[in-house]
Image (cartoon, rainbow, N blue to C red; front, side, top):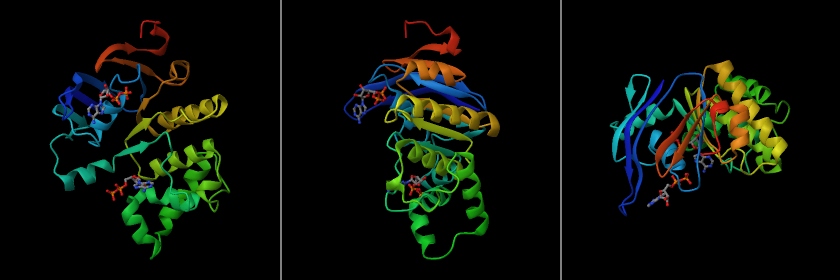
Length: 237
Ligand code: ADP
Ligand code: ADP
């Protein structure tokens, strides 16, 4: 369960991006965060793993309060939270396998491990994950030789390599054609169900959000203006 209580973000220039957000997301739920550009979707997602520091309020993952952790504790806690990006954030000159393995360790420790050897159990798991995301046989391909959809699948496999409880997904389909976008959303939806993963997806495309998620949260000017099942969503949001 992810619990946000009174989450407040004021940027250094004084702009209040999130007045006070309350949100509870149970395990296994795939939530779409929708709303116009500037509504605070990225800010909200980044406050959860503290890529953006919340100004006030509480962020809890399970029983653990994340908002007051030390840097070292935060590093540990972040292993439970994986991010998936619009631009995939792969390392182009590394192979698919290397990119996936980097999810296990973080990028810096990963470079370190390249000089040694990866534990065989990790490599085996990375192969399994590549099969899960539909990239069987592509492990040796360089990341820059992949299509957009394939790159996003590598991004997803890398995130899963962390064995996260929570996936934070920032516009995963914005750079993809409509058919590939639907396939990626289907994959995310299947993964949440199969692995009891919680996911929050920042997504512009409302029809996609409706079709593939369990719940829609509509944000406007940093406040939740809709929270319900996709079928209940009206044109007001
Ligand atoms: P969204 O993801 O919904 O497009 P954002 O979270 O990126 O919205 O932005 C929410 C609001 O916060 C916007 O008005 C944006 O201009 C503002 N904002 C974002 N980052 C900063 C910052 N570093 N300093 C000041 N204002 C910011
Ligand atoms: P840590 O702090 O645990 O060393 P990092 O901040 O290095 O972790 O990395 C966090 C996540 O971001 C990892 O999943 C890693 O794969 C990804 N990442 C970090 N830097 C890069 C980069 N330059 N290119 C692609 N992915 C990166």
